Image 1 (tube, rainbow, N blue to C red):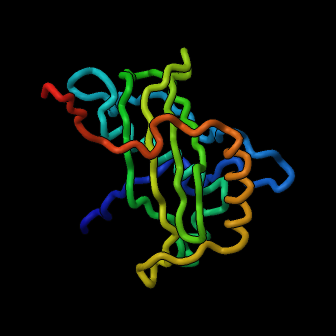
Image 2 (cartoon, rainbow, N blue to C red):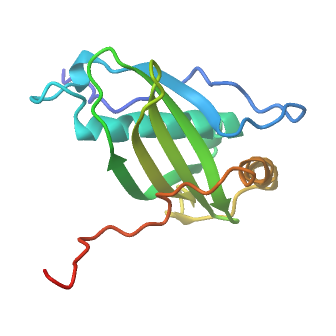
Image 3 (tube, helix red, strand yellow):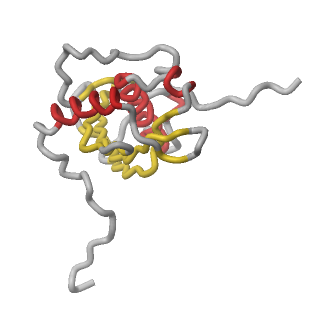
Length: 185
């Protein structure tokens, strides 16, 4: 008998995180995910591998989804949020055992899309290690296409966006990548 294939799981599957509370203020920014750098995340240079930065940001997104109410039951009903674009910036090295604290800000949203910005910090000295900017789509999984978010999720997103709009815009958000050339190049 062949073993069932393994799949990527997040630390929040089946557990949830801090649930939405209509009476509670929305933290600015949200801090929903903390983790140490694991030994299996270290590469041949002795620090956290680039793919693992994205893994940690993905876990942070999953914590955010569950905070909003997008968990197993929501997906079983046929809808989910998919990442369609990511801009990842690696700024500093992280090594095994470093405590990571990951924040999330909702920069914008509409009926089908969310624009989020993550920041990964070293929990010991508050150094910014990496950032990730992402565009997410709300999807009807059976139809295989985008779908409008339900009113309840839009209401929650409106509250998050209102709280996060008081923060200054992240300097890195919306910046294109490229090689700057001087006139002498």
